[in-house]
Length: 485
Picture 1 (tube, rainbow, N blue to C red):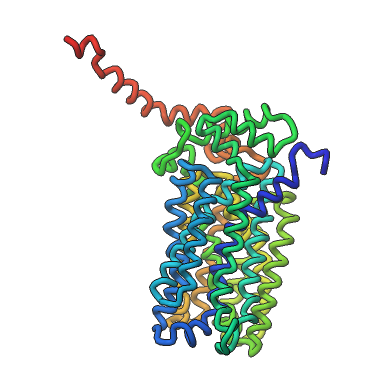
Picture 2: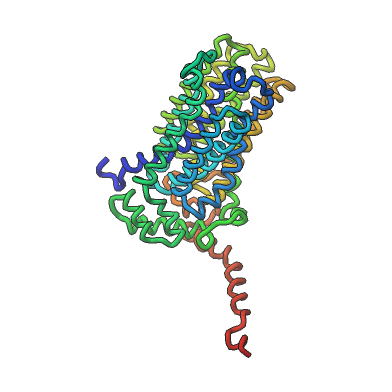
């Protein structure tokens, strides 16, 4: 470990700390499942089914807006400051969540979702820009492990929920469980303020602050700071338009192909069936087994084990091969599931086994790699667009899955998920660029299908008309002598 040219422990510590933002939204997303019956029976007994569903879906709704607004905020104020502000807002959201009125809990969930959306944009960007190229996959995978651990915890705490309020601490258990993520906010806030005090070198260079960029690099690397500075500087030149990227710039030659692939990947993470399987697993299992809790627990354990295993595969095999392998196998499993349902009905005993092996292929592919890949290929505004698309797709699945099942049967949504997986696999096989070990400049060049040295030149050509217009406008401004005449 000592022979490596970077400070490995420092890198892994800031990875875990920043990943607390992932853990915040994964815990909030799943804990409602553990508390839903208790809230319906004892806290909001007069609330309608629609009102209770809002408590779940407002988290996704807030995340859509958080992802959209995170792009420009991250570009202007930086990755570190955005995480700090998100933690402060996250604490406020959780406090509102434990006030026992429906309007306050809805506002609290909306704010918590907003913070989750912000974190799903800023955390992967921060990790990609702070990690050495050789560790991008490892840090990305480690952050997903943190996410899934807290998702598992949020389901496991269901054992702590009392059957009914009996007075004392049992009456406050629902508040305690909702407030657990406050610990994540406070720890990350303190560490970002006192320990991890520098933003990414990429951000500092894009803001013309070389001193802080060098200080940030010194925290990451043991030597060759000039070489690393030059690499990041060339990435900034190749991936930004005069230091920034606007929404319209995503549709230039520099980004339009990578935007299409990344956006499709963001949709796939939800439309591969993830939201339906993890949110409605008990309902799906209930058709083929009476022990739904056991199989949902097995599903969670296999999912967590697959995440940990992915840590070993990502840097060894790269992004594209794993995404292709995972999306193809997920598609085949989901296709088999829907065909068996159509032929033999939803109670066939093999269906539960198909579901519990599905997370293996999800987590070694789009589960662990989606946010990492998007952040490696796109600027902040592009990441925000793709993550907003991801959250929107998740919101659609959660809102309409039960309606589709009631109208057409459980085979219908699973057939859609299968077709979408296989379609994406075919597109990725032809169009996706491998990003493992490549700089942003090299990735952009691959997507533009030009030589690496042409990447910066192409960006300069695309901004040239704007620059010429500015110069023309300046030439048309009368000089002081002319104004005087």
